[in-house]
Length: 211
Image (cartoon, rainbow, N blue to C red; front, side, top):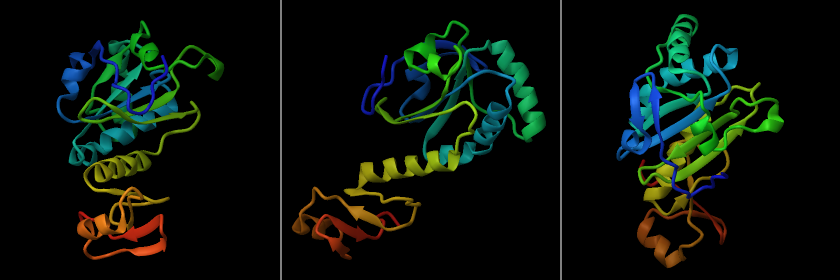
């Protein structure tokens, strides 16, 4: 099953390190980050889960909950969590899904046989409060993910959902943004009374509206 941006995130029921969940019910009215790992007790994954645990407050500020899946059992996840806390100095403060039958991995197309074996690749799905998939990424198993970048994209999505702007290359929260090309100058004047810098008719830079 190939999932695309704007698709509804498939629902599922699964056992996790924090008990059995219905995914959509667990998400509630907030946003979610569903991410996969090739296997427990692997080095890159260990550093990644520690990193996510350390960012819990930053995800919470954006109303985002993290959840992880790999093709190992919940018992393995619990034993591995102790290693993560020991080596990364950070507890695993989010649920890890037990997916020994690969139900979730296959539902989200996380197994890529050409990548080497039958474990999951490093996938990330950002899901909004309407259960729509808003961002996907897939990393090779050898490269750890950049969670600052994931937070940056969440900031962009949440900003552009609420204001008629888009964000330029390498944008960071607080930087100038682009007035939506769909707006005429007359419409833009009502929304951006402080004005903008028109580099081209289709490229109008303005201050971030919520700052």
